[in-house]
Length: 154
Image (cartoon, rainbow, N blue to C red; front, side, top):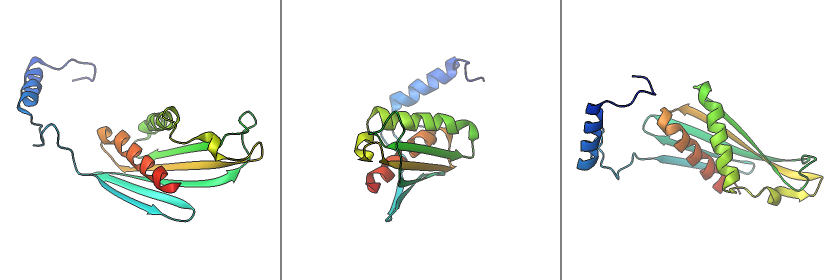
């Protein structure tokens, strides 16, 4: 079945029955979730978090350094995002989602990263490695790892 093919009538009936009975294929109820393991390590010059769930694992490292600002944004710091995955086709999509979440929710106030206007700003480097992941876990684990590292980094 192609991704664009609609589900069959039998699949539709099966899904509706499972929802009405409150079960999933793996035995969890509708409100159960898979356990998540979170490890955060905070050091003087970087912060690392590792998030894992079943057979999926993501590691995020946050570092910073002082640099000159962009000419057109003299009062704003810089965020650099790097994502590496075994599935290269997902890297750009994950980077776009993470960047949009950080910027649209104002997770990092770029103006607060300014040290001396026009001369020095902080550059925050977010390096994410997707070690093993199912496609449905990728976004969740990347966001959890990044936000937990950012929260601990300060």
